[in-house]
Image (cartoon, rainbow, N blue to C red):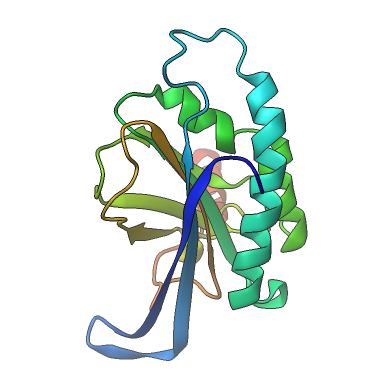
Length: 195
């Protein structure tokens, strides 16, 4: 995996009680994050990011997907998402380049049987910043119970010349979801127009 990865970190969060009430079952959220050298730093403005995307993104997608599935089998995954954060010497476009390509996202989506697009964030931060990775249901984009956010920090990343690339999964929605799905809202709003 000669693509400039310095390290890979894994975060596991299990929720047993929410709002003072026990969950019907523990809900597990998982994030795998790779910290890699930003291949465009120090080159000035680079017009064509594609060669490095093609070199790095598929390899990164395969390795990160393998690692996340080692902790949560595809059959358990209900929600998923991705995030990238570039260090202060890079452009937000550099973070976006790593995750907004089908050569990265499709590896993960296909492995877990997803059909919706992967929710995402891309940002520029200093080392140790709190990072957010949003998720939605892997096949039902309007299922609000699975509108989730995994938060994580890496004390020494991203360095100024690095990018953090992360993927996340959950084996359930929020512990006590009580708001309507987007589809229910749309149906009610349409009925209101007719009445």
